[in-house]
Image (cartoon, rainbow, N blue to C red; front, top):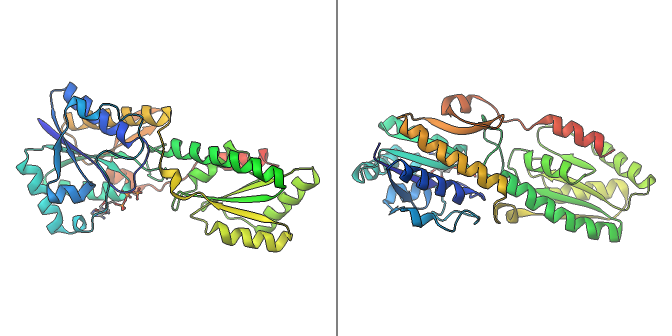
Length: 319
Ligand code: ATP
């Protein structure tokens, strides 16, 4: 292995820059040339490559987003598109590729091996929805962004003695809602992995009100449905004012937390180690605080499930 490349693909996530930095610096540490590919698989097909020297990743560890830009590419899903990508990789003398992204990006990476090309995935998505790893890069930052914003909402909720419904991201996974809900003492947390009854939520609100609570926060994961619609239903049942906030894309931005910077640095470095061992078709994962590599096939055969003990505990503590 002499020359490797790195790209970011799919939705961006805070900490991706720290992962790029780790790949570049760890690669140079082992005497490798490192090439950056701009705009994910689109750049791979177009040959949008840039040499990454040690200085190219200076001053980025604390920045959100990705300096290599991210994109989604329909063309890469076709065999012709992938052939163009592989031809470019070969022309540049690249022996291995690190793909920082979500599970869609990893499916693309796995297909590169059909062309005899070595590729390793680094899980970067705020959703924490990739099977086989306890955490993905960006999740911790997104949860912290959510709780910062809920803390602000809580101030106004208390002043006006209202119920606030906050819709958070996560696609089909409830992890962001779950962690933010426990961290913020939300009255109810609605996630796609657990069914809910509107009457239970309303009962909880009534119990809180009897105890003299001045406000209530209900967190809805986007995978459950529209926070606006749930707010409307709760207002209809209780007859009292509700306000809905959809946090949206602010959850994807911002400076990564220390946890995400450390995770990204460890994972990026591990991806280089895997390539140096001449292995491929693997994803870097953190399991029980150990950074490891697992086969894409093994990861794809699993189903992501958030830690439901957090859900149970949040239910107990939010009485
Ligand atoms: P996020 O979870 O943040 O959206 P992701 O990596 O899952 O990230 P996708 O849009 O699913 O995001 O995938 C990113 C890109 O990976 C796609 O635009 C496409 O180029 C490639 N890709 C996804 N799925 C496949 C597939 N089955 N075969 C080949 N390439 C794929």
